Length: 326
Ligand code: AVI
Image 1 (cartoon, rainbow, N blue to C red):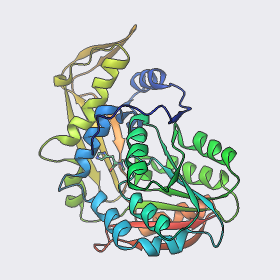
Image 2 (cartoon, helix red, strand yellow):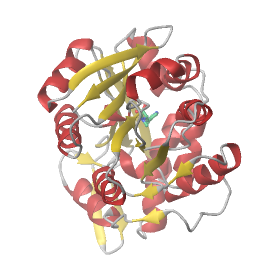
Image 3 (cartoon, rainbow, N blue to C red):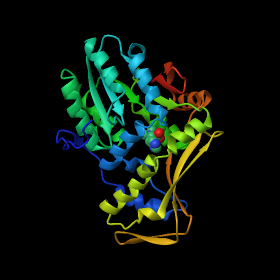
């Protein structure tokens, strides 16, 4: 895919800029923290594409196996009977996996509008361009911004039944409390009979998981460090990237796979008019990529009030797409 296309003005932008306050608040707390939702600027989008193509990063291939080879099974679980609906994808990215489903639905003549929601206007522009070329008959409304704000926007645009896709184990980038709060809010933002399909990365051999986030080529390290470059560029900061090192952990008991940046020396970084001091070896908590057991997925469903409709696994049984209903 050509990632250098110009942003498309047709993408709606309702995203309020909270980058600076979030960064400053996170770096002034202890332990220091940055939100991985800010990884995805133009360079971050490109590095994430590289991550998805890495041999170690099995997640994308597993879910692609589901979307490519079990497309009719997905459609059977999510498509409402005889009524047009909105297919809303949270964090759509390049929609590599969902494009197989979109093609299937268009070919079957099913009436639906595809609404990709993403924080990255850049990736949405590229997606709109790609889909209008590959699937000219697809009805598409792209929404740039935060998930729930955009879900409400989507609901205000049409009162049709909704099917929400939340793929790629994006739910793993929330800590356990945030995931519970997210599923609960999702349930409350939908109406009776609406459905959600959520992708969960399952617990497996811990080496397999750690390798996916600790690649030898340092692509995941570059993905983390890119957030410091973004802060330098957009918030007039002076992080010296050579003085920060990526460190990855996986705890097979809790399923938490976490990435950190380690300050290699005692240093002070300027961010606009603010100064942030680091001790040698002080950490910045960058991202969680939570891995799930079946019991934990059931617990999440019960706590958020959804009914279980069905599930589809990849051939290795490493990843599961679960369908719930309000
Ligand atoms: C987007 N998200 C599900 C990825 C993950 O696996 O947590 C982001 C990522 N971070 C490092 N590698 C991939």
